[in-house]
Length: 281
Image 1 (tube, one colour):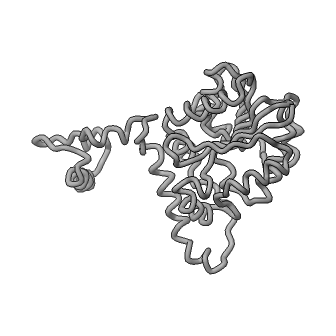
Image 2: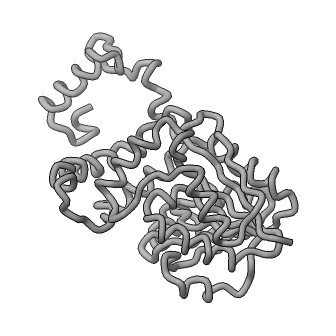
Image 3: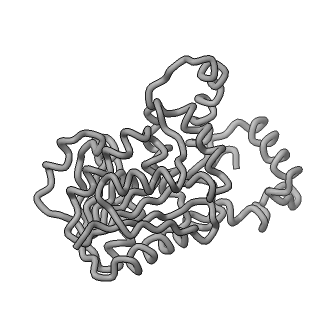
């Protein structure tokens, strides 16, 4: 095994013995075998999968170590992920059943949708499901993200999926689109930014929707998600002004941007919520 992995024998032995002691591997004679209880942790796309998220979690810990300085008032800007591969693989580790649930809710709300803009869509898990459900999708993200995911996640080869480079925090990004959309999907975006940035972003989104078009926001909503407060600490450590926001704040931003028929839905695991709102027909 050490030869196949190119591993140090002493180091591998110590780690495997620790995993055996914790019950994650079983030992038969001189062989170590992954335990049944641990297998779901490494099945890509499964509900309990952690493999894609571990490197990103280790990156986040570095930021958390600076919390004492941040609490004393030292300001930071938004951190770029130390490793775009780690960040994208973490985003891609969202369980497939969660993605399917969210897309189903979107299409139940907007049954006549034919086009969708996936803002900050990263590895394209949502875009691919929208395309598989018969929509034409545009995934917009930063240039370095698009360069990476187009090949590593084979998004460039997907029919009816267009990859677009841009910065949705800039006013000019709206002018780069010739078409309007039936749905603008915003997954895990609003926690990165301040109230002002989110309000202005929703104003831009309203300009990209057809009449009767829908915005769909997936995120942690304070007062409804049990993880919202803790996740806000992560945003404190990793962003300039990000956080998690209440239902009242989302409703205020959406009404300001001209949306109505605002609904907040608790997703199946209740970790996050889906907020939908519509432009006038």
